[in-house]
Length: 266
Ligand SMILES: Nc1ncnc2c1ncn2[C@@H]1O[C@H](COP(=O)(O)OP(=O)(O)OP(=O)(O)O)[C@@H](O)[C@H]1O
Image 1 (tube, rainbow, N blue to C red):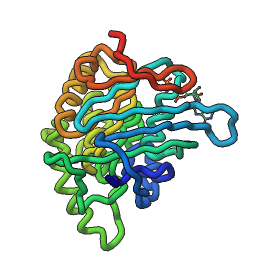
Image 2: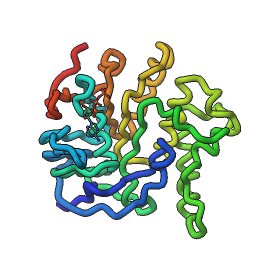
Image 3: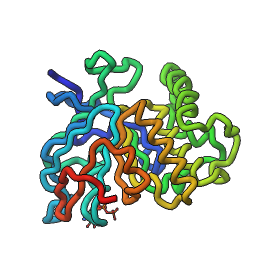
């Protein structure tokens, strides 16, 4: 079966942060065959340009649709580097990445209104540090197409906006509120909503609980549990205790950039 995949050189999605990355050019993904997982990573190696050593060495992983994948491991082992490759921010030196959504009938699902590259959403660590607007509405619509002829896409995004706010429980927040005045937990909700407007096939989160107080951590963990019913989540985190009950599949990143299927040590 042929499925659309992430070309190693293809930026995939609308990124909300950092702002400079919001406008990465979208190109059509190339097509190769892959299995029935939402995410299939095969033998990824990555060596930064101009360096001698691989940061990642033969990484393989497969994540089922609407499941919660966790990657943990020592600092500097290569977790963020892997997320950046999955998000299309860097190009793997070798290997392939395949992302696909399936319908209730088990068949690959394509949304004709969605740009072919809008498959991955990513929320970086401390996403609130990259907020640029002085109200919630401008923050969420920053990066939406401004040019003529994009009305249809804007209408599509607008109809998704209400659903995204619903999903993350932002309905009660006035759209003219300054994002910086939201609580820590609500700032994370906003960062999530920005990505969810695009209905990504895969949502990647780098340390989603970092820097939050205990209540906000519990709040965001509960929200991720809710989101898991709707989409596929891949999370890098050191906060294993709060997230342990959500995890369907987990991997430990070892020094040397090798990913090993393992349970989080909680
Ligand atoms: N462009 C680059 N050039 C050279 N080395 C790099 C580059 N980017 C990352 N590294 C190195 O690759 C290793 C992995 O970095 P990475 O940020 O992916 O680790 P991590 O597991 O996410 O760490 P942490 O848990 O602290 O966020 C580190 O030793 C880092 O210094």
